[in-house]
Amino acid sequence: MFDSVCKFLVETFASDFATWLLGEPVALTKLSPSELSLEPIRADALILLQSEEVVLHLEFQTQPKVDIPFRMIDYRLRVYRRFPHKRMRQVVIYLQQTNSELVQQTTFTLEDTFHRFQVIRLWEQPTNVFFQSPGLL
Image (cartoon, rainbow, N blue to C red; front, side, top):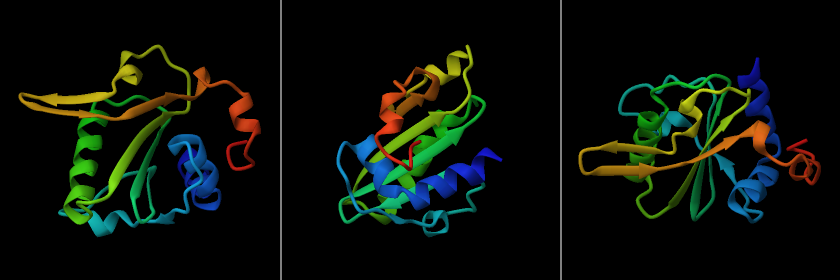
C-alpha cells in the first residue's frame, strides 16, 4: 500500500520533493531502474528521478532491513556506470517509527570501500516542513 502511494506522490510532486531533499527546486524526470540493470532490480519503493546535473534516489521503507546500505551502494554504482558525470543524492525515508538501530545506518563499509547516504526518519521531522508543499502534505 505505501509503495504505490509514495511512488505516486514523488512522481506527481517531484519538484516538492526536490526542494525538500536537495534544497532547491529542480525539474526532475523519472529514470527507469531498468536503464541501470546488470540484472533485474526487484525493488518495491525504489524511485529514481533525474535532471541534467543530478539523480535523486528515494527509497521508502516501512520496516528497517539489514541490506539497505548494500542496496544504496549498488544503486549508486549502477547510476555512476550509466551517468558518470551526474551527482547523486540518495535518501532512505523510513515511514513508520521504530526503535531498530538499522534506521540509524547511513553508511556502507567493506574493507577500503566507504559509501554514505542520507536517512530521514519521518517521525523526527518537524511537521511544518510538510505544510509548505502540497506534495509533502
